[in-house]
Image 1 (cartoon, one colour):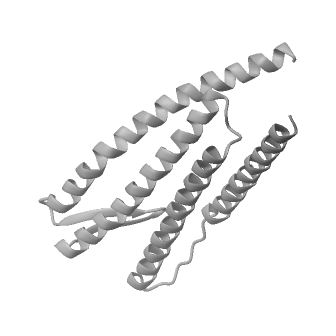
Image 2 (cartoon, rainbow, N blue to C red; image 1 turned 180 degrees about the vertical axis):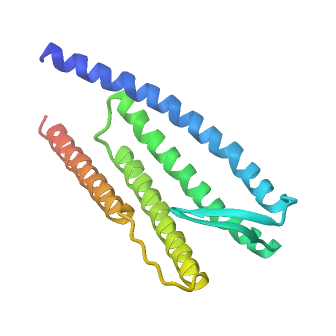
Length: 181
């Protein structure tokens, strides 16, 4: 085997270990900030809020308790999905750090992480649409703005699915090579 290839594999494993530790800290951070965020939104003494959805900003909105609970529920769903994404991606990176990426468990974690990411992106798009509808309903002159985030998101997730399929093909080839040996 080529010595240069061994060095590259060792570098990938080392970087994967660092990324694994980083994802562990991200997971802890999400666990700590989730209840803090809920407490701040629910028990905020000021009845007025500034809301930002994407590029839209709404200032001094009066929020009822029911609206606050809905906001907490929506953001909690995002936090839950972010925790799922971090957990599955962390487990996938663990397989990278061990050098055993072409197996069914790693691909299952990659698929679940990608699904969580797609759902988070879908929720983001729904929130952006609701914010856009609210803005159109509140302003008398009609102003329509378009963002390229939608297109970039589709390109990103398309690329991620191609990488997932490459992992699946590598797993199939790995299984076939084990059967021939």
